[in-house]
Image 1: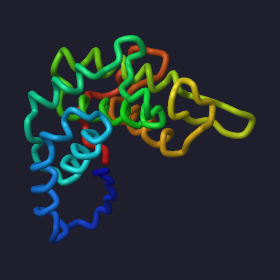
Image 2: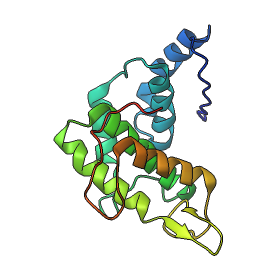
Image 3: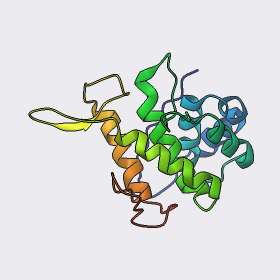
Image 4: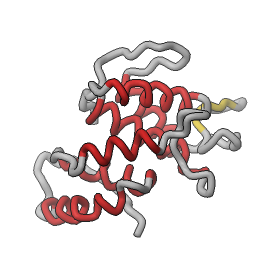
Length: 169
């Protein structure tokens, strides 16, 4: 099924959080191989502040599924998820694997891919869902900016403004 994530911070854990975490953790093995579902499942666990299951499998899946040609992640059958998936994977790599040398290159290439989807028109600027789309999407813009903030990325440079892994949200 489709994983959807909505979170509100209230200062205390909701009474259903343990059940939600247990369910997400139980389904993670099935979701690890699917970039889009993996991003949702792992985001869910990350928002609980709890540890991620199967860290080695998770890192290997993220790295092996990155597109070498453009540096992004996504599914050519579902291009509307490309920037979303790429931003999610960059955030996961930065937060949980930021000190791994293999992750550093993947993070930089993913950020460059996300930046390549920046668009402007006469009134607004933002990010499209994929390279072939010129339409600016608010969700893609939010996810792209989240990845930039998470890593401290400055587009067009090799600069990372602060160490990866900083918990900003």
